[in-house]
Image 1: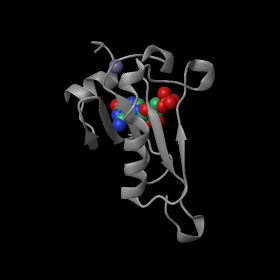
Image 2 (image 1 turned 30 degrees about the vertical axis):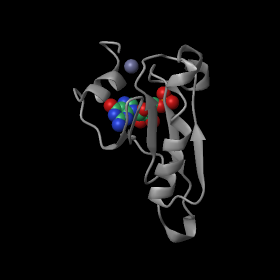
Image 3 (image 1 turned 180 degrees about the horizontal axis):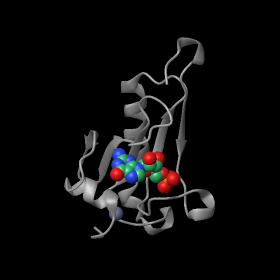
Length: 110
Ligand code: 5GP
Ligand code: ZN
């Protein structure tokens, strides 16, 4: 945990979030500025800024959780994105995986 990190504060409940899932190693919640309906963030509880800062054993649940959320939301098409560093568009320095549904525009969702 890093005292000044907003995602560590979300994990601890010091900043409110729309929590979707929590386990010993993983926390998942809705993005505050969603790119589409159901845009979720899946994060390791272990604090690290970039993917290579996180031990392998803290990453094992991330994709299974992202997959379950996509299924639960009913996202047929979706992107999993993970940014590392400013040039790669990372804004929050706590590793996070975006699960971004790509709705069928003809259905008017998102
Ligand atoms: P990045 O560009 O670092 O990959 O994405 C950071 C994401 O975190 C953005 O999509 C942004 O909307 C989201 N975010 C930033 N602050 C908060 C917050 O306080 N609560 C929630 N739920 N999402 C946040
Ligand atoms: Zn953190």
